[in-house]
Length: 204
Image 1 (cartoon, rainbow, N blue to C red):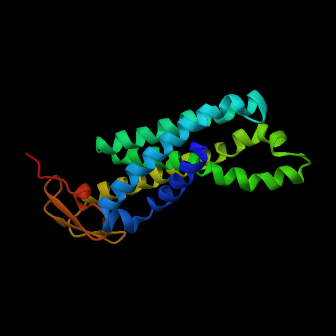
Image 2 (cartoon, one colour):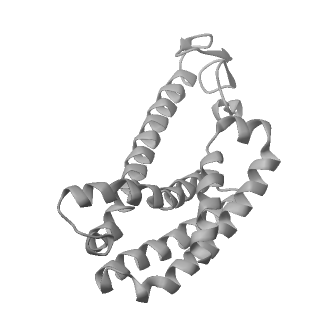
Image 3 (cartoon, one colour):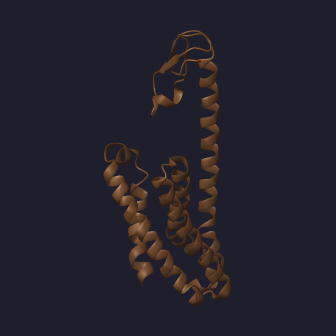
């Protein structure tokens, strides 16, 4: 019952946390909503663990839902810890994974009609595989997306780094590089969410 009452709150708040406008314009709301999300996930996850021995699909389904509950609690607390330590890249990754598992509640319900179409007579019968397919694809999708995002960011960083080592005043992808000679101070102006990341102090 605890899991059923609290998990929908996590599902709602978790989705709102990914809105860029909320983080940028209302950081306090983002932080407080994040704390409620963490508490909701932990409470719902503990409640889910308590129901594992009574899973309607038997021990195989119970194992899948148990793994989900442990990883759900772990990634959520990991995301909170990373935010407190100001490790925001790690925070984003953990919270993406956490919400991927939170969203497993939606994925599960979307897959139930597929189970009936495949000839399963009841939820109990199909929960043997729903206990895994409801959340593992979500986690894999987040992992692939995060890896591709990191790759794009690294590629962009290499381009900008090469530009800083080049002639002052050049333009690359909307950035204008200003400053002295090679090895000296350069300033990168243009589109940036964090311009400091693209500045290099003068040598010496």
